[in-house]
Length: 362
Ligand code: IPM
Ligand code: MG
Image (cartoon, rainbow, N blue to C red; front, side, top):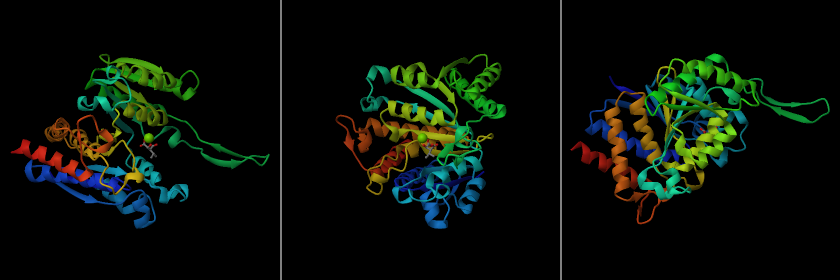
C-alpha cells in the first residue's frame, strides 16, 4: 500500500533541512522500493503568511489524511508581535492536539564520532543513549482555566492549570513501559510529588500500570533531582517518562548532553502509532537560508517515521547506517565540527547521505 506523507517544512531552517530529507525519501522511492506519495503544506509562520492561521485548515486535513507527518520547525522574529493564537508555536500545539499526539519520544544519543562535541567530559557521556517519553497533549500546556485576569485591587494575575486525568497518565505510562520493553527495561518516572497533588496521582497511576510490566525496573525521581542527575551522571537513565512541561525542559537538557542538538530526531505518536516526526531543534532564524544548518536530525526523523509509523525498519536502518558512514567520513556541518573534520553545508550533507545510501543499494 502506498504510504501517504504530509510534509510541513514550517519556517526558518525548516525549509532547507526538510529539502534534504525529501532527497532521502526520493532515493528510498527510486532505489529501495519504498511506495510513497507526499504533499507539502505550510504550518507556523508560513501558515500564517499563506492562510492567516498558524495551522491552516488545509494543512490539518492533509495531516489527518496522511499515514505520517514530517515537520521541519516553526517560528521566527517577524511573527513575535502577533496575538498569541496566531503565533507559529500555536500551529505546533494545535496539530499535536488535533491529531492527539500524546506520546513524544525524544532520544538523546551520543554518536561515538561526535564525542568531542559535548561540553561534558567524554567519560560522562560516551555511549549515552536515553529516551525521554514526554506527555504532549495535556498538563499545564493545555489545562483550563488559563489566562490573565484583573484582580479587585487593580493588578493583573496570570494563571495556568496543571491537570492530569488518570486516563491521560495511564496511556503515557503504557507508552513509556512499552518503549522500555524494547530497550534496557529501565524506566524512571519524573514528577514533583513532594509538592504537587497532580504528581501524587501520576506516581500512583504509573505504579499501577507498571504491574503489567514486571520485567521493567521502575523508579521515581523528583524533577529537580532529575535535572541534576542528567548533567551529573546521565548514563544511569534508560527511559524517562514525564509530563508535558517537565519533559520540555528535561529533553532540552538531555539533547545538549550530546553536544549536537542538530542530530536528534523525535516522534509524536497517537494511540494507533500514527505520528508526526520532527527534529528536536527549532527554526534557528539567525542561520536560516545560509546553507549551514544541519539536516541530519530531520533525515533521522524520516528513519524514526519508517520505524514507528510505517513498519519499514529495514529502510530506517539504511538511513541510519548512511548517516553513520557520512560521520565516519569526517563530514560535518558547522554545529558538529570536530577536530580534523571537513565542514560542509546543508545541501552537501544531504547529498552525502544520499550517496552513502546509493552505495548500499547498489
Ligand atoms: C518543543 C518546543 C515547543 C514546546 C514550543 C515551540 C511550543 O519547545 O517542542 O519542545 O514547548 O513544546
Ligand atoms: Mg522545547
